[in-house]
Image (cartoon, rainbow, N blue to C red; front, side):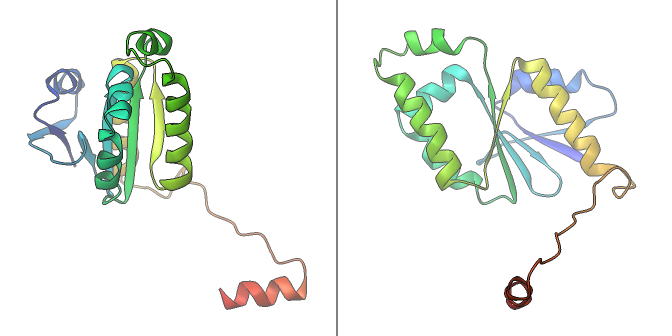
Length: 162
């Protein structure tokens, strides 16, 4: 399987090409920066870009577009959050930042927010996720979902209706 990477992400492409046994396809992608099998779409943001996209409200448009995929992820690569807050020239940015994170959790439950310390950790995550999604025997190592049994008759009836 191929990893599709946006052509504008040249630094990421170089990092991914340094990994062996990966097939990288460079394409112009309108939504997301990396596309993986099974509907995984990853929007990569540095902390500075994340703060800027919060302030100019571009983040909400990107999230609305990203939710078109089955498994959307926003990957935030952070180095020094407080430095980015200091240089953004908004004295309430820490409140705006926390408000945005809570809005994402409440209004965009489908989107996963993931934080990485550097580009290498993010690339390792992509490689690992790609391997997990494309391995031959997906059943090995994947936990089976187990539903708890109803404890009362009324709960049993309610579960039967759903």
